[in-house]
Image 1 (cartoon, chains in turn cyan, purple):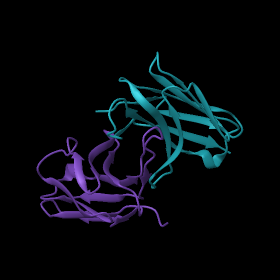
Image 2 (cartoon, each protein chain N blue to C red):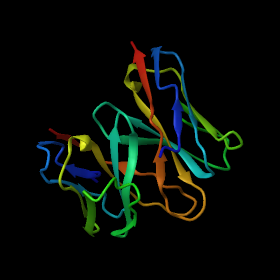
Image 3 (cartoon, one colour):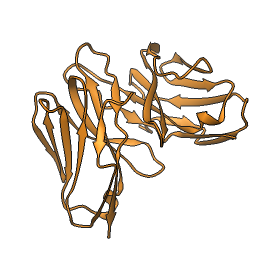
Image 4 (spheres, rainbow over the protein chains, first blue to last red):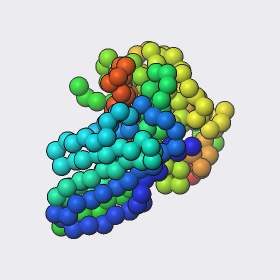
Length: 113
Length: 116
């Protein structure tokens, strides 16, 4: 069963605009991660935010985490056509050290030149 | 490092045939994961291994599916007999997680399976 659910399912924007994707989850987590998947390729890790962190930056990426609402957002600033891809959130459950990651269904981002 | 290597990249097979997907994880990684991706169900974890030992196979859909990891550098996912509903992209991934660092996993390019 899916732990994370991304919203929206699809997003289309113009180059230069910001893109915001959201993720909601159901159970306690150790961390939440975002991955990117280009068409026909494997997933690539973008950023990890721990449960005790509220915000994290990496280049044009900004991730927030609200554990009280069990939600996260991924912001891509100044988007480029090359950012066109599917974006997935993944959660690592709290407790133990099973290191199991559960993925959502993803948001398909299209950046139009 | 070459990354996680999967083979075959594409396979078309007839219903009832045996399918074997192969994976070579990144050297030094001690966790290996098999995921299946479909439009309807998204990315599902089928099974994962730690130090070649299966830890959780609760995602394996039915007895037609089996996975092995005979050594640290090789794993297989077998479907026998295959059915059209098994058509999907199968991803292998590996990682080297440690406490407090989180589990960042590295995916292969996937094996695209079509069962006709």
